[in-house]
Image 1 (cartoon, rainbow, N blue to C red):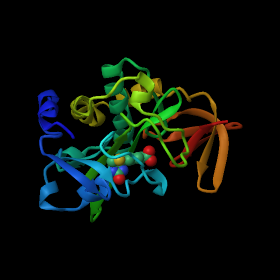
Image 2 (image 1 turned 60 degrees about the horizontal axis):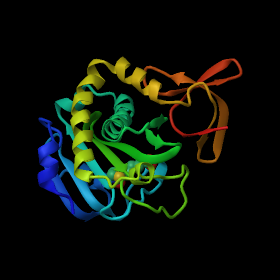
Image 3 (image 1 turned 90 degrees about the vertical axis):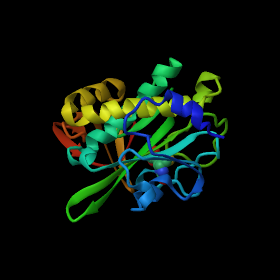
Length: 257
Ligand code: BTN
């Protein structure tokens, strides 16, 4: 059971998580909060579900997470919060937030994998899916969906990156309320920084991505291409060096060659 009192004591935000909705089961927290229901109107609303029946991952994958052991939640941004935001920057920032929360609380090193996976010892501990709803040509709602493996010991199924949990990596039982509050506290600060100082976010992200400079393969469905992970550009796209040309990559899964 999620202890709301412990969570509340640790939460230091003004907006993010102040409208907190806890539920037992939903299809997907992202899909749910993207609906324009009265419950999900306030900017900063957080929806946490103990179980997702069809949690969404990037590229039409599903996100599997054992009931009650991990965190699967979505954060809603609306209004002024989304007006100046660059979604690519937010994507990178969200992975930095999760990585910082883990490092602050558990003194364990994390790494980032483009665009927004958080790894520990080369295994995936967290995935992030940002989705938007658009009215006319204006983005109205931005949803940051975060899945983070905390206390799960065994993972079954097929994964493009081997999964892990914080408990597996640290040997400790993870207090879900503490890490959720830490994530939201850092996120609120970083959301302001994303629009004011995107270069800081880009530099921090580069520093935590150990693949820059490595030979990689980018896979997108049936297509793949190899080259050197040269850098990310000012919009957060991956720059792939192939022979003497630099190609911009918008989507895809990165793996080391
Ligand atoms: C990925 O790595 O493929 C992204 C996974 C994102 C999973 C989270 S869990 C909470 C939120 N709701 C969803 O349906 N997906 C995201």
